[in-house]
Amino acid sequence: MTVAAVSRCLALLEVLANEREPVEVTELAVRLDMPASAVHRLIVTLLNHGWVVQDPLSQKYSLSLRMSTLAFRNLDARAVPDIVQAVLDNLARETREYCRLAIVEGEDLVWVARAQGATSGLRYDPDMGQEIILHATANGKAWLSTLPEDEAVRIVFARGFQANRPLGPNSAQTIDELRDRLRVARERGYGLSLEEAEQGTAALAVPFFASPLVDAPVAGTISVAGPAIRIAPDRYDTLVAALHKAAQDIAAIWAVRSRQRANVVSVNERPTP
Image (cartoon, rainbow, N blue to C red; front, side, top):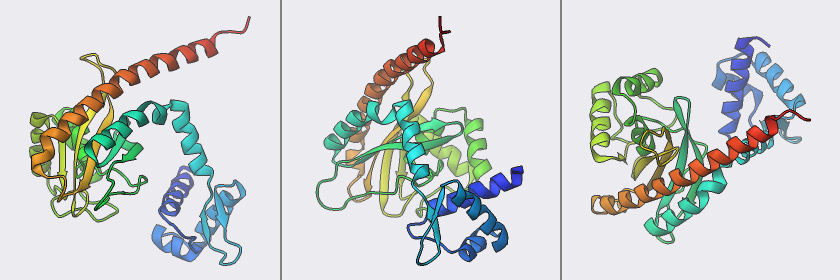
């Protein structure tokens, strides 16, 4: 396959990943701005390799569970969920809100774990498959604020201030707004999103590090989110304190797990006598 064909195939997988119901080839062609014949060739290839399934009645297409299986297998190999879930569960119980953890992947953040702490009233329960919009989310700003300003601006500028989904009315629209919000995040020690990523919601987030050492790199972010009417300013101090405690707990566990994984790799790489 050519590089262009690989790019089109990946774009097709991303479109299908966002769909709850099977989709027709013609609709996929419109969304991808590609000829229907080219989309059909890609679909057939993915079908033959088990990445796509076809509904026998409607003849429409959807992703198989293979991608989900590989994703969970990769997370399991990294042992990400098992080392953070207990900490997230405790944080959710303490804050009584929705808590999530994201890890740094190159120049992106990716959701890997969550815990729901709201037991009554409004519940914020977003899709874990959503892209993390760095300039509009508390997690994004918490991470970007740890980077040199020029690097953070470059990352956001390369993506632009638009998104594939509606953002909240307060999301930053210019580089100057972004610089100002990152400066505030650095001064406060946490990222805040108030109706930026989504209308009617608010979130607070802090970075966590790969170990408790002073010079440890940022490994990811942890957040508390919910309806803006409930994540009110008079709760910020309490929520941020809980987030920092959780971040410290995760850093300690993360360091231990990293050493364990390094030992396993070392043992597996030893030559057979």
